[in-house]
Image (cartoon, rainbow, N blue to C red; front, side, top):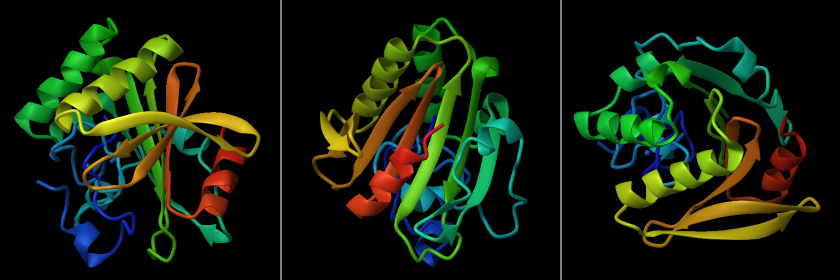
Amino acid sequence: MMAAAMGHPHARSPVAAAALPAVLAVALVAGCGSSSPDPLASPAAAASVAPPSATPVPHEVPDLEARLPASIHGTRLAFRSFRGASFLRTGSTANQGALRGMLADLDRSVDDLTLALADDPSGSIEFIEGIFRVSGAPPGALEDAWIASQQAATQHRLVKGSVAIGGLTVDKVTDAVAGGTTYILPRGDSLVLIIATDPAIAAEAVSKVR
């Protein structure tokens, strides 16, 4: 899934490159071996999104990458994407079980899962955006299942709320312990997940959601 204990949003920094806190977050590329099953659940997980430098960046789902913005705040973004099976292999046994359990609750399998991430390769802006897609999953059920999985992974320390951004009411989850907020925008059988500490960047990202 996209990761909950995502470390710092500067995904390409030395800290980020160290791998998931052994997070959305969307610790995606380094693996879902964080304390949460999804890399975009909280900015505390951002450190996990950067793959080891020797690891080729995967681009397994180009159509999902194409839905992410090419740039944010004048900064070109870098992309990566995974099919469910390859993403699952990056995670710990516990996180693999959490992911499979969430998919089973939706009557779906790993074969139905695809995900993509975009971030600033230089780390100059604190921003990560991901798309978490479960083919055929009902939007409301998908969001509920994703939040429930994050709550379980973080011992229920995530607080759900909503906020007005760019004229839209957007759901969000905030980590009551580590801090950091993930904005959630359902789009069909996908969740768009955004981490941005600057409200202007968050608003720009929401305006570009597809």
